[in-house]
Length: 343
Image (cartoon, rainbow, N blue to C red):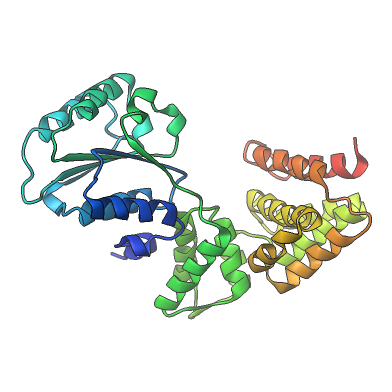
């Protein structure tokens, strides 16, 4: 069976973890100093390395496979599951100095289960270490949070994900255009795992070892870059008719409307930042590439540009509505009418 790329290239050491140096440096330092906490809380969005860091932590403190327990709280969320965990804690480690319990999606536990877990966190055996991972920290009781050493994981930048994608592609023996890597990293939405999933889909579908941007667009349902640029230009020109035609063309070509709006928002944000923050120019250029950068810079530097915060807000609203609409293109069309006709 084929191994998922995300698992194949999962970091094995702290130095391999991308985008979380503010966390890995601190944890590595505490391990070296012998000041290990009995409970850690890793919070942050999906697919950014929380479980990977938890496993590395366990490995670095000498925890072997028989003494590492991974629990998915989404499937084991009741008080009986936590009671079973509490009972297992009382037995000594098999072959390690510590027993490590990684509880993923811990916010899914029931109230009763949280109460039972709290008692364990208050008085754990000295050989027991907990690593709680969550994507929704606000759902955790304060009493649980207060008994943990809390680490907030950051979403990696598009540049970090792009570099990761390019590295994996090279290791897999494929070649990738820069614009293809940029598109995959953007569609990954700040998640290493999601970006890897997209990349794996493209590799499986590729007829050769070269992954062109056309291939990436076709497989992911993303619109062509030129189409997005033309759409933004028509909005800036105030041409409602041609803007609507582009949406219709995208619909006929089975473009994913959620992705369509996402790419629009990404470039509109670039225009706003280029208008109001000269310090961001280098970063935007790295994210978008030379050709797109020139296009956005031209609109941003124009004396009268219609791409402003109000337009961006309308398309943010459209993005949130696309998945709920019976006609996915309708929220985009309504946004166009609003921003161009200013109804």
